Amino acid sequence: MSARPGLLELLAGAAVLSLMAVGGANAIVPELHRQTVELRHWLTGPEFAALFAIASASPGPNVLVVTLIGWQLGGIPGALVATVGICGPSSMLAYGIGHVWERLRGSPWRRAIQRGLAPVTIGLVLGSGWLLTGAAAQNWHGVLLAGVAAVVYFRAKFNPLWVLAAGAAVGIATSL
Picture (cartoon, rainbow, N blue to C red):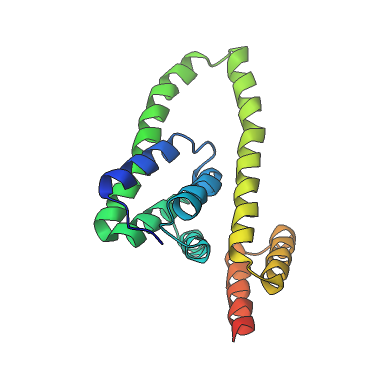
């Protein structure tokens, strides 16, 4: 890992990602991973995957992964700066666009934009899942575990946290 970022660098990085988060924070996971692991080497792949898993298991919005990364990199100030950076710009943009969106209520442009953004969002979220599987599955056991967990998750009628807990238990057991 390289040197930890300064608070302004963390704020700027989170603010840029904030404006890319079409469909929520899960849509930016691949770029967040690329920035923090591959380009800047602030985290390792397994560290990133662990922070994502903690954020996913925690109650609250999925944007918590950015807060946890900020905390990992800069303690409490880092967590606060990362959270403001990821929430601030997109919130201000959403507020402004909300007024325009209401004026376009019956417009064909509005329907076209909504139809166009749906597949983009799905693709971004699927890309996030693919990236996280690769980061967490470092050997054939991990790949198999990720595959089984995905199948169970999509077919199960129970809370997905049980799948996460079972996967963690199997992962611990196979690493002993």
